[in-house]
Image (cartoon, rainbow, N blue to C red; front, side):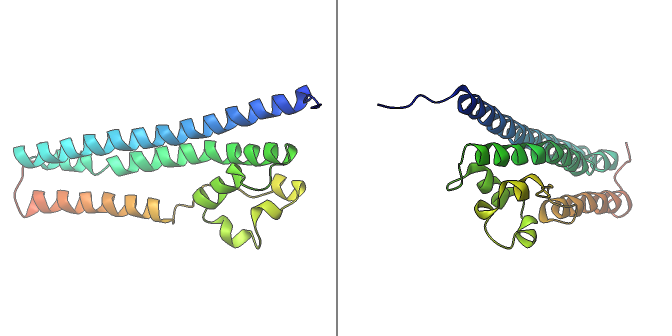
Length: 168
């Protein structure tokens, strides 16, 4: 005869499901905003080149900074959610095949230097004080956004000075 689960485990499972859904929601929001911003940037750049307007190129060079801001906002929201997922999984005794540990290994590359062993081997107190934070401003994604902003500004200056585009 199977022993019925207590309501505590069921409520923890529901909280885990909601934390995972919220995390996925914010990462999806970041993806959608990035896609929209890139599409808008392409439209701005193509319009600027077709109309020979340098001011529009300057406006388009600011779009990567908008993406960076959204990246940092989502990161500040996602970090506590991953910590919550890890703590709930510990309370439910989920150690192997942990989705929270997978998120840490995938999205928090800077944690590799902090974690000497596997995250599954950490005890509850170590998981509670795990310094989860989104990638720094010197990680690959922000660096790519910096370079694309700088590239947009260089194209603006070249179009304004060398190719004699109008400002507006």
